[in-house]
Image 1 (cartoon, one colour):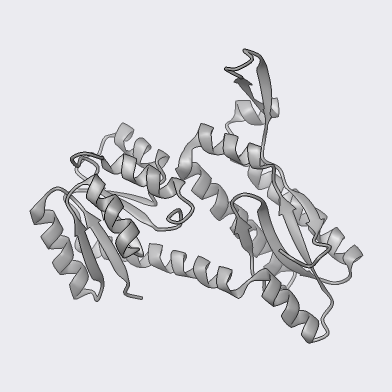
Image 2 (tube, rainbow, N blue to C red):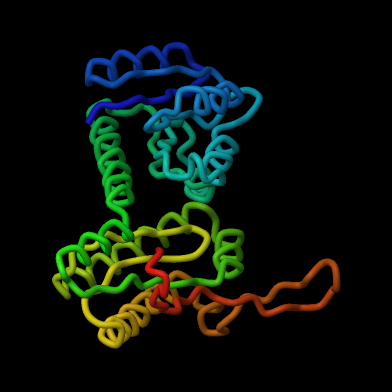
Length: 272
């Protein structure tokens, strides 16, 4: 599983300890001593995972993480916050900016290694699933004479954007994981192998066995399950209200912004 890891920390001692430990485990290690340099190194080196401190010169770790998680090109790169800041507020901000893991100093290199292995395994699993492709799976089934349908479970992009802004990148990442897990469980129950594609702008795409009418019935059941998962992500007051109130600064009028929900749609052109 070894890959490339970026270590960003303003402490030369910490950088060298991590470099030695990670290289011993077979990883290629690149280093950055502040937030600005970390952003440059991410673009240049394209690491598989980032480990960084919070308190760094120029741009702090929270800001770096938020930029990485807000950019589609780097959104899926796992980020581990490794810091001496252990207060509840610090942990909250670490999760809010999208960090995949928050660890405090002093740290165990063994535990750090386990965390790296876990995050890289998840990341590589997502990449492998995406590489398989819904469209490729559909074509393969057609070639084998298996009747199947590509089904898109669309969400309102505005609702997703509102969710991201109110609840943060960490909660958004958790939402994506729960949506994917719910679809994978449903496919498993129906003895369908997948894959599952999650498109941040539009929603989820899968291949379901059967005729169009059969796939529609299955899709309705899966949509209900996904909507239950989506509803549970919201704070009780938002969920009970059924929308998020928002005062539009341009009009000074209060708007009712939608909650996330999924609408199934069989792709007529067989394109995910």
